[in-house]
Length: 368
Ligand code: GLU
Image 1 (cartoon, rainbow, N blue to C red):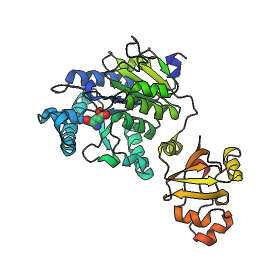
Image 2: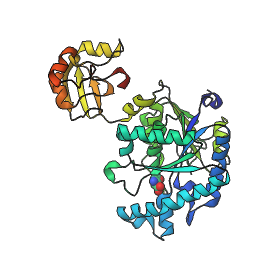
Image 3: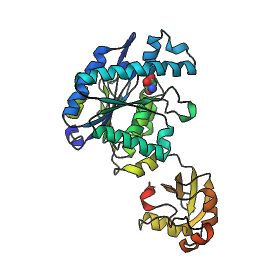
Image 4: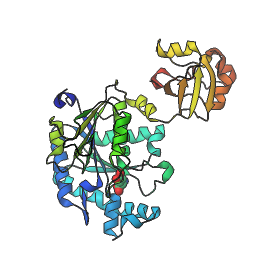
């Protein structure tokens, strides 16, 4: 399909810009950042809603403090991020000010999207900023993000941000032209509809000397995006007016196109979560969910595994072990042990007055 048609309905865009696309060896590149801001400004004037995910905090901190990034400890890196982030956001602010556009800074860790309440809060803030005509500029909160709570790279972070705002398109700008099937191919692949094992293998595990994300993390991001039925473009930030040209339908870089039905809102959040438990359902419940499009009731649950709390995501399986969906559950594990297999009318007597008719509501369910 021509790119122009693919991109026709796009309204909300997340643009991720990599470290090498806004910095030089001696710190932030005014030329690169002002070129990028010009490009973003043109899209805003065309009516697109836009969130920027920027890298470059650690690199900027390192040049500011005269440190080499390859010989520093993790706490030092976190310290550099805190120094660099201030300079980075200020540079954006200065350039966007010239266009009459205000910016807001949002620093996230993985915890902020895993937890449903914090996810919803972050979404409200991002939506409100966009409604106010402000451009949200997001980075990972590197200064506080320890191993267990961090995304680790901004490609993955930007896919989650795209999920947060229900974006129609994610654009990853870096110093590479797109996804190449063979190393020595002259042009990148134009369109990819599926992340096959072969694509993953060819993406390798690399990272450049500037940022943490190589092609591997970009493909991981594409995998998340196309699972939602949305689109992602990998393109080179060095192309003049790259964003405008992408939106114009020019064949720049590689476009990843999701073919599944679009998942929005809470369902999208559910599909992103690693399940905390597993429920095995009897044939009647499987049919109710899959064919009759009903909610999951306690009576059809044969067994449960894992440690989950109310609101956590659990996976669903039939009695032969086929996993067919995920949902956010209304009960914790110990409550579930008491009510599994019971009729809805019995739950009140078992658990007292605070109860739900459904174990997993239809609206909180994603089937594979
Ligand atoms: N959050 C990091 C920074 O701002 C960049 C991570 C990445 O390049 O993926 O320095």
